[in-house]
Image (cartoon, rainbow, N blue to C red):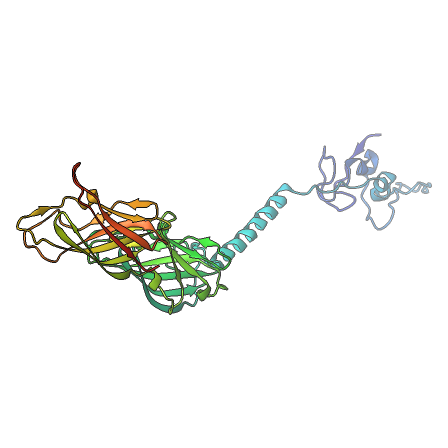
Length: 386
């Protein structure tokens, strides 16, 4: 017998169409909807009671089985609607939402950590300033440690951290007669408790000083806020130079790094001239130069009188002057002594500078013979402060 689709799904009442495999709304399989063609011609009875076939005429109705509702047929009871598949678009939307939430969390965290992110206004933390006003020499330049500032961050520092910063304000004055320059990135380090060493994260003001000029500079270090200022050291000088350890203390004694002068009175005659060794000054630096690591400079001040009736040409002190200490014989690294002395000259002063081991204290200034047949020489022994 031919079978046809009912006009409506027997489960949910949704209109049906030929060729459909299951109800578009509730998923009832098509085979559960099929009914005999004759039954489909009959007027549909309400689903609340079984429908009966009525015969025309006076003929007594014969016994006829009631037509069973499709949702009560075995095929209906045995069938099960397929589960709706999870929509891919829903998964994509869920992932996009999760990424947006993570992005917002990262954005806020970056701003709170002091990182510069668009639209986030960073806040300058409280700055504590400690005056220092201590001075020390470097490469012949006088450096004044003006003050130290501590804060969690510095907004004007492009490399600022948010968990602790230390700013040193330094002023350099060039009292020498030569141009002097350096970069604080190369010569400044901070020694933390436990002897760990850190370099600057930011420097404002690379030193480039003409004679007589002054320059202010800012040097920033990333330092935990828990580190006490008085437990820190500023180590000044490159790795191959005589370094200075400056305590971050307003009352620090830096006299050890200042030039130390010993008064002398050594006398000798050389080339017919009367030479007097008047003083010796030990220092970690000269004009424009810092001593090498483990070394220091000794600068001798000398006075010369010419009692002869003629000019005496002594020549270059780089040729005849030497400074002896132990087994070391040093050549001058700088000199202001004249090459000649006029007749009757008196009290003509000049200096000789030598680079010597830092711990040497006993020396002899030697003037060597000049010329193959000359026996003219002089020696000035002396001792300086440690």
